[in-house]
Length: 435
Image 1 (cartoon, rainbow, N blue to C red):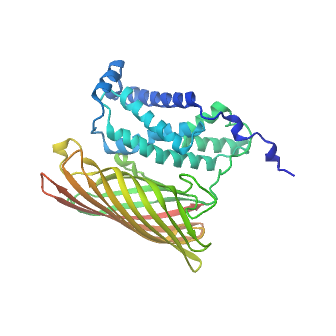
Image 2: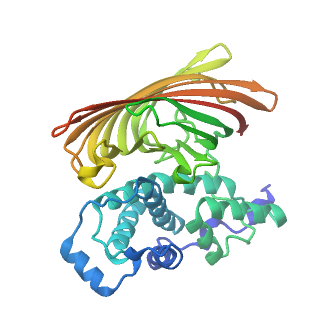
Image 3: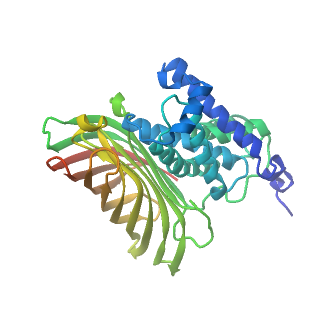
């Protein structure tokens, strides 16, 4: 005998395969809303556009811009995520949504700004929008419940709208937002873990400028979606790690950290206890505060291993990164008009973590390094590394944790003296795990 849900309308009945016009319309409307906000509320002169600007932009083509770091590496990727989720909400797959994202970014650069189109914005909105967008699309799907009613349904729909606005709006257009119907297959990843941290962070050991310091209360939200060692699911981003950290009392760097590590595909080997994954990941990285700035759009060849240790497990990670576009602090901004350099590069990452089966990492140690070869800004090679040590102790329904992060940079300039930088950061926090 079937369950009552079997007789409900299916999610597919609300959709036609590949709504091209609606996807294009939603991208145009999203750009229009952002344009009006920038022009009328933020009063940005770059957005008082005309048809002549579009013609001029077609003739001039792409160049590199000098916008503020967080504009280029937070706002533009988020804007790109709106394009991506608009396509995903209208029945396009992950891969089919990629060209929509780059097309939406191209449209913004050429039609919605008076300054010349920016190649770095196009890449950041495209690749960053894909990484953010697929994460938001899947997280909103885990929150939404088509069988819910009443107040629960309202709050779930509101949460889904906040996480993935384009998807939320599309559900209102189709009627999915209020109609009781079946949930789509694969709505939940099978394994997931959320974590909210509230704490305090302090920056110390600053070189070459000892006067640089920073102390902030912060909130960090992390989501672990899917099991990379599962053989029952397939497809891009069936597993990803998403994390974002907010500074509570620092408006200049209100968003201090974003990272997305999304699995694209690979192979799982091993038994039920010990497993090994080898494959490819897509990565989005952003770190910004008063001491340094760093961002990277990259792909990696990755190894993930899980080994039983008593009632816990040891996880090992190794990655080799190819950086499509990286951005990092420069010491000679007065010569370039921008306080960071742009370029491609290479990177690596190694980490170990000891964790319980149903909890966060009790102990973890990680190190990652990058070589960014500047092709816009100063003529330079930037060697940047991050080393992190973390401890996490359960205390009743919550946990107490602490992190130490060491940033090192060796910036070698062709035309100026090289600079070495060092910054240590300590974080202490309370943490709550959401399963």
